[in-house]
Length: 447
Ligand SMILES: Nc1ncnc2c1ncn2[C@@H]1O[C@H](COP(=O)(O)OP(=O)(O)O)[C@@H](O)[C@H]1O
Ligand SMILES: [Mg+2]
Image 1 (cartoon, rainbow, N blue to C red):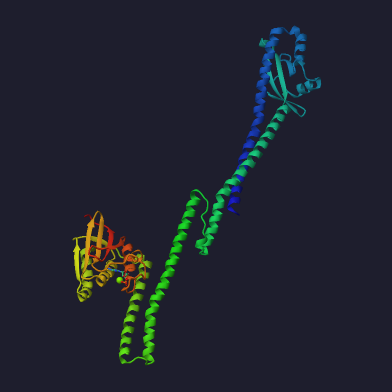
Image 2 (cartoon, rainbow, N blue to C red):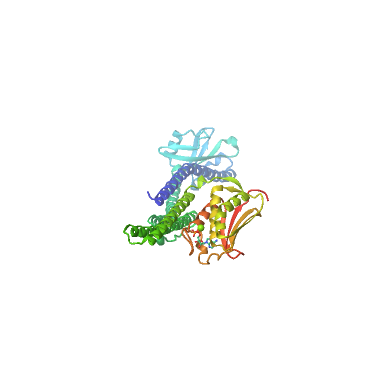
């Protein structure tokens, strides 16, 4: 069943239960209230009558005038003599009087309802003064009159209930529609996401929690789209990067096999094949490493590393290449800075930066490490030509490389490692003239 119908059904059921209970309680109480009210009114009328009668007809000798006076009142009443247990006078027809007298005990003053045939009467009795006289005025109202009032009241109440219920159900339908419509349209947007129709996603009109859910859905769709796009570019770039060396290798290998090269070209061809195979191996290794870094976050070790040791290791590994190029490696590291991370991987990230610096630098590579304001900063910079402005925004993306680039994966690997160690990496221009990479980590120890 649709959510809207469920909500409406629940609300209607609740409304009907409340109305039924309220109706029943009112119905069962109303007759008692009416009877009590009627008795009070009869009593008031009776007291006025009695006081008038007391003044006008002090003694029982005046009974004739007495009767005439009572006859004139539009009331159903008895004049009852307690002492003799007899009815002296009544405005009711004689058979009714006899019937009532036979069926009920007139001397029992606690009996409030008198029965006669199918009829019942509400009674109220007032003693004349002096009380020793034992003369009593009994006023009656047929219960049927009160029951009619009760029926009338219940009918009106029913009408009010029905109108109220119609209005409430209409209102509930309107409100639930308002609540459910955005959910329905959100469902359609989710279907589009499922089919990856990202461009067709439309904003929905909603408020409160539904709006927040919708926002999360849009964010999720954006993230998914971004992920799918990056995955696509990755495969395109990767296949391109793998295909190029393979085609070179294929060309030379076929040429050599078919004997189209002379001895000298053959030698050169074999050299190219070896170097391209090495390049392929490097690309594949780096792709595997990158995939591992992204998928095996948990395999990251967390050890305390003395930064000066780590930088020494970088220098040791980079020294052969820098010496070959005649490039000087300078180091300026604040003593006793400690950093938490996976030593092997951090070494790998720093080496990627250092090798780039050595390759692009003219005469020097500078490695600095400082600890300031709760931050550890490692800077790798050189005095080369720097990175061109148009490359800078994409430099950390996979397969992005400059003219003399190799695989274009080194910086992507470095960034993945640094970010997984809780740090971040920024690129800029060095005062030495070349590129400057700044690594920032939260500091673990007191300065
Ligand atoms: N220190 C540097 N000086 C100038 N350009 C650099 C430097 N480091 C990196 N780059 C540029 O960034 C590109 C990407 O670097 P990287 O991801 O390490 O790939 P690769 O070194 O395999 O080309 C390089 O091709 C180069 O153009
Ligand atoms: Mg590199």
